[in-house]
Amino acid sequence: MKVLFEDKFIIIVEKPAEVLSEPDGKNPDIVTLASEHVCKPCFLVHRLDRNTGGAMVLSKMQKATGKLSEAIQKREFEKEYIAVIKGVPEEPQGVFEDLLFKDSQKNKTFVVKRERKGVKAASLEYKVLSTLEHDEHGKISLVLIKLHTGRTHQIRVQFASRKMPLLGDGKYGSRDNHCETALWSHRLAFKHPITGESVEAKSFPPEKYPWNLFDMASLA
Image (cartoon, rainbow, N blue to C red):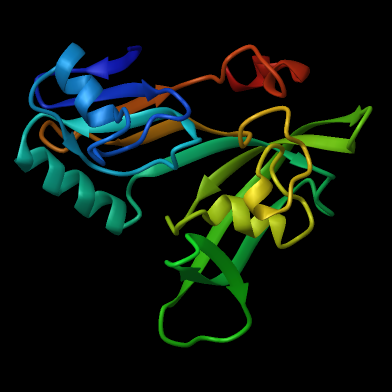
């Protein structure tokens, strides 16, 4: 397991894609893996979708867990992702704001037009890093995304609702079945819950499709 940052209070690891964020009793999860191979105990602070890999912070004590959770709720915890999407946004950078409804039975989130029970506001900002022509899908783009809110499947549904699904994301309309959902937790930045010092960690996706189609040097 790749460790991006560690001290006696917290640890930031690189979660592999297809590993769960928390135990379900059947499949590998990052909390159990970290507890077995890096530190024990480890406590969950935030979640990543199963098919999303990258930087993820865990705490080593409940005091740190609470303070990090509070920072996330107050939007004092920066989360940046990279994604490969079909198409090109109209503007090279911008903000998406939507109302989202999560259907728990279908485990799917939908953009809706008006507020009602269960509907939550969602916001993110994006920047197009690179665009190229793909033989099968036409133009595809590498985008950097900063979350303002942390809704279920937020990035996936906000881009898909604008006809720009993430490559490999069949649940939200992608026709590319050559990869898992092309979403990666690239950067975390926050104040240390105990020391108050600035903490930053970056993670980069593996050298395989579709990530290897793009030059990641601009993200270093």
